[in-house]
Image 1 (tube, one colour):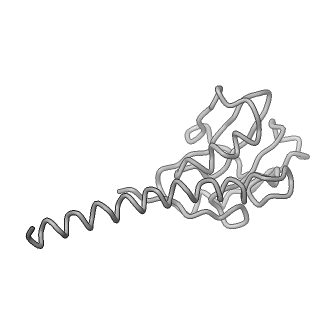
Image 2 (tube, rainbow, N blue to C red):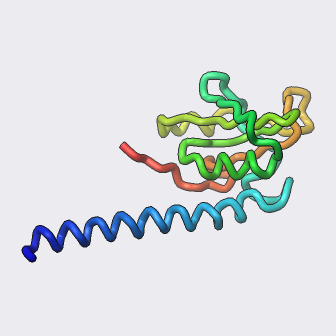
Length: 134
């Protein structure tokens, strides 16, 4: 077998291990970010104001803990909100620092139309790294 063949095999193994590692870490990230309502770093019941342009509704998600986990699993999700059995994910594919700069609203605010929420990929939330796949 030549060196090019060995290099290809090595590269494929490296890719397989990195995919497995990311999948394994999702479980740890979900536990870290979404374990306790109001206490976990990704479930503080405070979120940046959701933009309707970047918000996607997840009607098949029926609990707030599953909504938080869905945001952790989506590499472009900045934050989540759950209200009336509906999950909303604040998703933005462009890695811009402005995403995390608007003011936050919490569940006690009259502006908050949701029951629970959290920040996943901004500084004061779980602060998980954004996945750049381009």
